[in-house]
Length: 181
Ligand SMILES: CC(C)(COP(=O)(O)OP(=O)(O)OC[C@H]1O[C@@H](n2cnc3c(N)ncnc32)[C@H](O)[C@@H]1OP(=O)(O)O)[C@@H](O)C(=O)NCCC(=O)NCCS
Image (cartoon, rainbow, N blue to C red; front, side, top):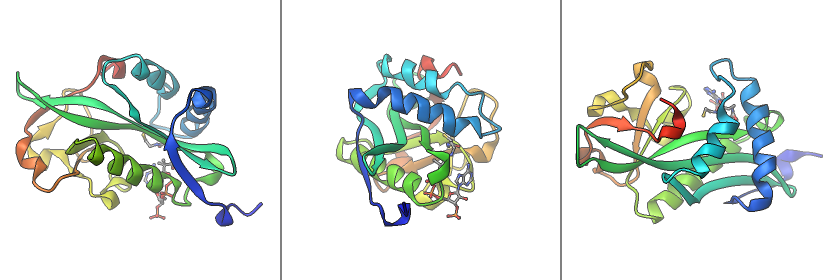
């Protein structure tokens, strides 16, 4: 089958997708040297955490098969209280044999669209600095936003869904306990 001819649909996760997504996360991250292979359990824990937003867990479907997944959850950013709410994009994955065909990009763009529709204005992530800038992500430290754990400065990135939103944020990103950071 020529997958280049098949179209990709991005839709909400459904109950029946949960096991498939678990396997997808295992396979996709098995090939990532920086991964500690915790992503399948991380996603399970995040679903039980108050930061979870069911409307922001999406899958990519191609030929009736789930081939990609993305999850955005709530984080807080600030120097103290009150902190401001934003979203964390983590993780995103595509089945290894279909990577490099734009499925990850489609998941990220649809995640952004739905997050904006829900009224969120900022997304943070820790990820590869060669990949995410194409979606508008910038170095968080350039905007006085940081993490409380060791991470390469260029890997901590932010993206404003609403122009000017970055002016409203400053301080440390507080991730959900589920991340174990
Ligand atoms: C990262 C990932 C989701 C991207 O999905 P994808 O469908 O392969 O990506 P796209 O087809 O939209 O984009 C392909 C581009 O991304 C680049 N890319 C993919 N993974 C990358 C990575 N880990 N680091 C840097 N660039 C990456 C490719 O080189 C390609 O670049 P090009 O367009 O300049 O040639 C996918 O490769 C994946 O599941 N990787 C394993 C899990 C992972 O590392 N997830 C991200 C951390 S949470």
